[in-house]
Image (tube, each protein chain N blue to C red):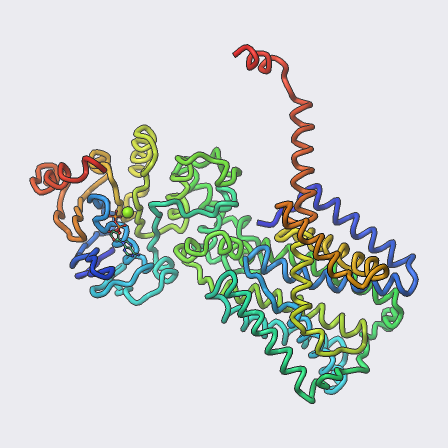
Length: 247
Length: 334
Ligand SMILES: Nc1ncnc2c1ncn2[C@@H]1O[C@H](COP(=O)(O)OP(=O)(O)O)[C@@H](O)[C@H]1O
Ligand SMILES: [Mg+2]
């Protein structure tokens, strides 16, 4: 469904992505682990096209999309959420979801009707609000809801484009353990055929949702396999003890 | 995103009644001022759509209005096209020009966008100024107004022309609301709030900006066709960047991104101009001081100030009415 081949990227002398090859099957839920600065977010930026890799390619549903701009990849079913909230701040939760749903349903550039009142848009907005527990906040503006709710909306907006592949960059960063746990349950309730790539900081939480695990360290894939194998991996323990403790 | 509320409806009704009253009771001079306000109001609605709801602060809307005026004049005088067709043609030409400006400017933001639009405006100005087809420095005269005698309206009469402009302003206001509430308009507001995210959702951002800038240009062009018919003579001064600057002042003075605010701003600006210039030739200075006051007050223009203060007032009244004495005692105990 989503594949990278020999992806490579440097910022000046800093080599942030080193020969990364990943392959996600349809419906696969893969968690990316790795210490701060390992290049996880930079990898996402290259997957969605916000950054151009120095070499290597990105494939979505069997097609090479490396040369396609961000919006184009998004319309082919690639959607992401950001580590740092990237929302429409002055607007309501409903409008935030509606903007995304309007793009997906091809209502975002129409002059002849209101995108927010279209039945197909309403349906997605209600569905997603239900999926990520935003129902009580639909009419509140982003600035009126708590940080935790904004984190949920961050993923909700990404979901409202009804993606084939959903990339989530530390969806629970900054929220308490309770909410974090709840969020992982919520991820488990998403449709099984949705392919997910999730950057997660907390290893235990990662095991809740992962079918497979990839570990990045200094831009390099140092582990790629099943969660059970990851648990026993010596290398992982070293990285974990080495630098995750203080993160 | 654009919403109506009780205050906005109230102000709209007040403005419309005031305009109607003026249109039916005023003498020649009053009608001239009214028509000036109405045409400016159409222009600032066009500007508010792009600046207030799309973050595209344009310094070429005066020039776009000028393009509309010149196109109308050329079509109706030199090409001998019937005035209604000339109006439609002028609106289309201005819209197309604005679409191109919007498309080219779509990649720049903030001050760079302002400068790009200024450059386009100045290009149009100097072209019109130097070209003999447009009458150069002398301008073009002998422009006729629309002939509505079929429906028994004589637009050469100042009162009828003012009412005609009022009807068009009403239609333009309605169209502006529809544009802002359409999928296109809502996406534009999304782009203003967070362009990166809209792109990540799959929106072709430059198209949305260009399309709305084009629509806004059509409205500015329409204002131009009315300005040409109003004075029945046009000169390159119409395309001068100071006209764009004044339009921007009116939008900010009234309340950016509120539609209703710029209408209030247009009334305030023209009335102030005529009242103050009767007393002193330094009327720009007075407008400047008022603008500084409005900007310093941190309110979103005159209307924005009223809106935030009336909101606070209503909230206070509501909380007074629903206040429960018990919890207050509990608080004072603690
Ligand atoms: N635009 C950029 N320019 C220069 N260096 C960058 C840029 N973006 C990220 N980096 C660097 O790349 C490295 C990886 O960053 P990032 O992908 O954000 O890590 P992670 O998400 O794994 O914490 C860091 O050292 C960071 O400083
Ligand atoms: Mg990161």
